[in-house]
Image (cartoon, rainbow, N blue to C red; front, side, top):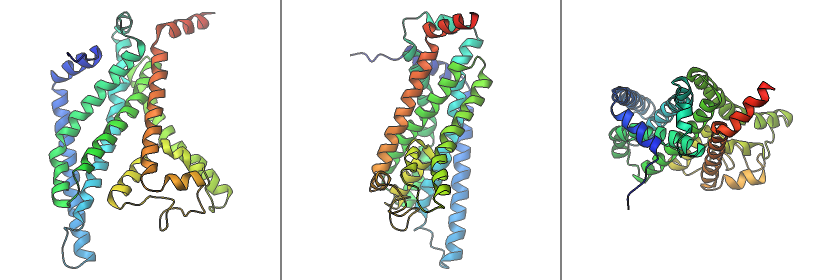
Length: 300
């Protein structure tokens, strides 16, 4: 049985493979990871020599994994919107957008193909960084299954970032405007999801947050913080003794979500659902039936 590729994914990958831009991007990506590895190793060596006096750093080398992982997450979160924000608006600037709509592909297939091509390009970078990441597992004594889980979270983050970028690209006519709007969406998702919790803390004089933290299920920052806490320590950042919040300070749902790895899985599902909604909104915007009706209303 022959595997059917999305035509947009196939075309974008062929164009990417023929360009030197991907090679220079991989070089810069590897350089940043190498510098991060050297800096993290140097900090671990200094802290071990100062605080333990024996210079034994092997027990602390496990922290190379979150250092390298956070560096990759930050890079991917910054570059994916740039890749996808120009996907639809770039077609409009090249005046090929109408031609693309005349194909037999549905608007959702077009949007999904653009995001899938961005995710696959990001996986090129992740695979290229595997040798450096492997050093953290070899010298740190971590289970290799952690690397598999991390790759899954990278794919999830890429889908979310790509969905934000593709929606902004469908809304805007110019690529630079779409990129700026993408980072504005980032501020809404990453920053304003803290607002209910901060308001609750202010109203209760920092005594209780209740269920106001449930909106943080959509926040990738909290998702990764909880993900690394679960992998490295087996504890949650809130809801347990000795953590950020006690049982009396959080709500019933929040506390039970923080038991075990429930928060990680529920947050991953919420982020995926948000990505799907953004993709559907982008497909609705790309659909010529909706855009044409909008133009008629403006003319009236």
